[in-house]
Length: 178
Image (tube, rainbow, N blue to C red):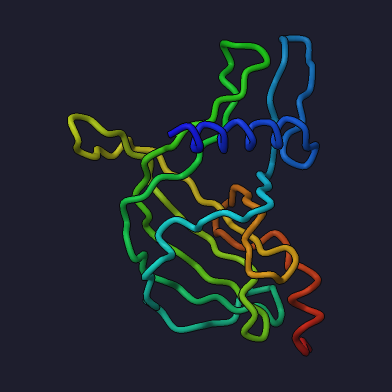
């Protein structure tokens, strides 16, 4: 438990210190917390990915030449994801918590067979008396391997239709994309 708390403290310190992870802006109404991505040098574990199986054949991605997507069925739908937020009622506070989720969909993105991202769609859950209860809210995120080392270090919220915002240079340079 102490090592878990130490890990959380290190992550918070890294998020606060890194301009890539969080940009805090002052405005007339007080402070707002804005960030568009979360970076973790050791890489993120993609929820639902262990033991995932292919649910639809690999297909080309519309308007992204050379990029392919494979739909995966989550190995375990019950998961949790590290939630990072700034509560509006407490100025300057960053909240990190394990959020129970139900993984609905996983997409694997590749160029020339080199996987550079995984996208997940999930529903938020609450746990009451040991039972998971759907909360009626959902989100999607994409995890990127930014350097080709097989570590998915960058996590970004995804807008529908859950397509990657970018393809890392290593993926396009390593593959002969025409």
